[in-house]
Image (cartoon, rainbow, N blue to C red; front, side):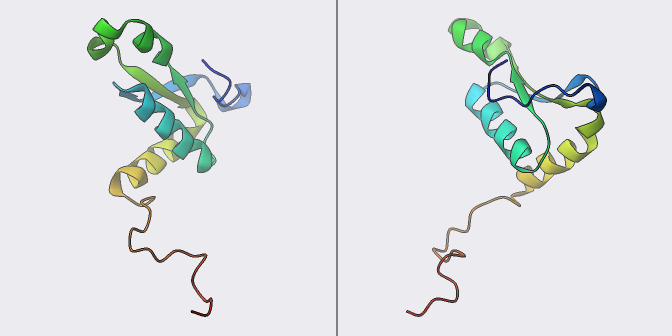
Length: 101
């Protein structure tokens, strides 16, 4: 695993697979979403996929979370897939709200 992965905390249990994807970039993005939501997360097998490009469609990249955080991680993942973390594309952001034109 790499240095951006969350550190192992024995009290939270062993790492378990939350989901698998076939693109390392997607796995890294999901890890970031989980970590931003306060869930420790790690990506495994991304370098294996990158090293064996011809086998990449057959090697899933795993997104791991501690066993004790699995329920919270599943809720964050479901919210992500629903679009709860989607950026507002209207051009109105919180920085501009309340300021004089």
